[in-house]
Image 1 (cartoon, rainbow, N blue to C red):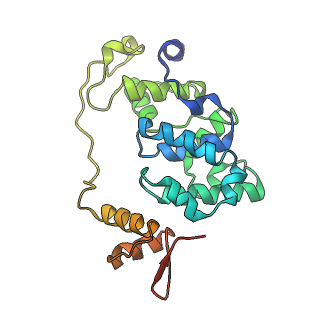
Image 2: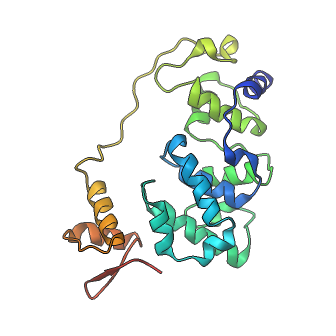
Image 3: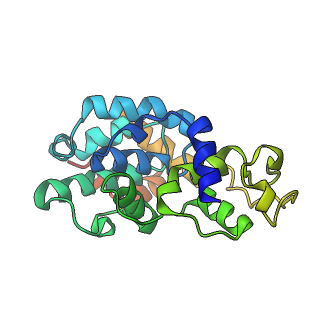
Amino acid sequence: MDQSLAAWFSRNGRDLPWRKTRDPYAVLVSEVMLQQTQVERVLPRYERWLERWPTVEALAATSAAEVIREWQGLGYNRRALNLHRAARAVAARGWPDDPSELPGVGPYTAAAIRNFAFGDDVLPVDTNVRRVQERTGHAFSARNAQALMDLGATVCLARIPRCGACPLAARCPSRGGRYEPLRRQSRFEGSFRQRRANALRAILAGEAVDDAEAVTALARDGLVTLDDGIVALPK
């Protein structure tokens, strides 16, 4: 199966900018941005980010406030703070052997950095990779990580897989299957997440915020500071 997948990927793999680098910082930026955000939305923001902060040292030297400003529109703003904290840790001590030691870097992101930046023989297992492995029952090689991600994102879809276009279909025990829809994330419109986003947007614009609960939640996550009732962006 690995050979069939590799051959398919050579013809159908997506041309993504973070696949053209071994820079662990660029890989980290892409992986953090891609968490819960679609590739199409990430592409222009990834390139803009690296134009502004091309190295981990450049990001570490900027303020958390500027990082939060630049992140607006990508959602889940804590990711920006964790990325900034990770950059400061690397700038101070270098890249750890285990990237999961960095702030906000979990097992998947650590494996992605090790594979895509350092060439380690470790398979980063995201939702797409897990789906392909579970349906095929095959343990794929780490060198096929990108191929697995693309196959899961474009062919081995969550509900109705495109088995007719799959290079693994002939040997796949799940061929032709249909699946129940996954639990959808709660609606953003009218949610507390929206209130938090609106409050942060107003603070970034220098406007007053009349939502103490949302401001308190932002402060708890480190996205703003509260000092004697005065709300400010972190330094």
